[in-house]
Length: 107
Image 1 (cartoon, rainbow, N blue to C red):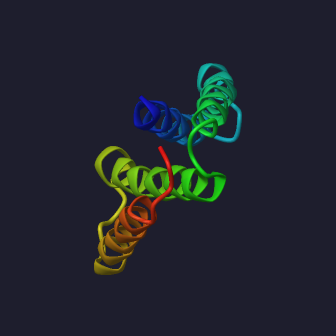
Image 2: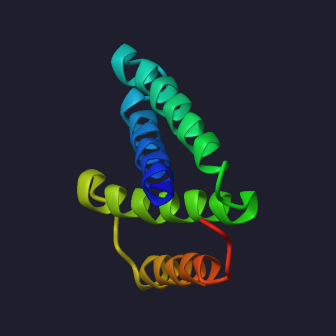
């Protein structure tokens, strides 16, 4: 259950970041409002996840996986380039997240 809460926070954060791109500098009303809705919901879910996760581990997983997922969204949805540097960087983020998860944090 705690993983589900944290994963929900990550997905909502990615939706908020995607909405930022779609808001075009807050010139489009619906995605502009969505930025605040998704980020608010993300932070609420992260707060709930912190009831069982160490803050250092939860935040690192939230930000790391969110970053990796938004790179994938950028490549697939916005046509951003997939370079070797990006691919290796995503892999390093995932290795770090796995390492943090294996570090023994109770969840």
